[in-house]
Structures are given as structure tokens and as C-alpha cells.
Length: 107
Image (cartoon, rainbow, N blue to C red; front, side, top):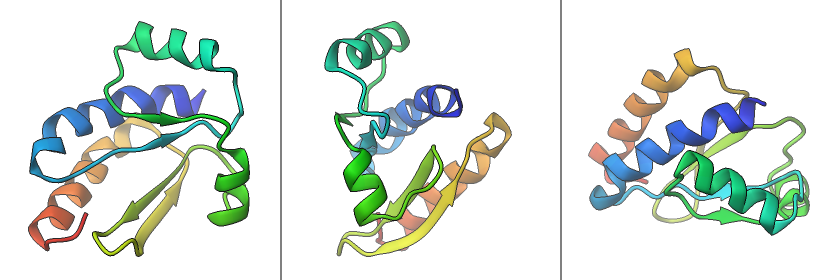
């Protein structure tokens, strides 16, 4: 459920900051089938791309042990911050982080 709660917020960030160089890439770490993910995307009108079958990448590459997990990656591909979990009250802090990264020249 936290992932599904977070997704619309990520979509809003993509819409608001995408033209400024910020990109959201969602990873479906539950390995749900494409039609299941597409149904949710359509229902919520999500704007961000979603990588399917991402559990191996999430766990093996990024060491994710709980979902959702957010990684903030700069232009050089370096993880500059990460956090796990999501509650709607955290969205303003996430947005401030986006604004700081964009102001510093990092994504």
C-alpha cells in the first residue's frame, strides 16, 4: 500500500519538475504483471515511467529491503540520498529535496 500511496505524488513531481531536468523512474519491485501495473497507471493517471520486474535490480543493485524506497541520483549517476517508506506528510520534504537538487545542478 505505501507504494501505491506514493505513486501519485511522484507523478505530480514528474509533471512539475520534468521540464526543469528532474526525472522520476518508478521500479515495480513486486514483479507484478504488466496488465496489473497498467491498470493502476491508467486509474491513477500516472506520468512517470515504470520499470517492470524490478525486484532483482531493487534488491541486488540497490540493496532495497523494504518498499517503497526512493533514491535521489545526480547527473553523474551517483546516489546522493535515499529513503525508505512513504507517508503523505513527507511529500513537502521530498519536494524541497527536488528543488535543492535542481538548484545545485544535480538531479
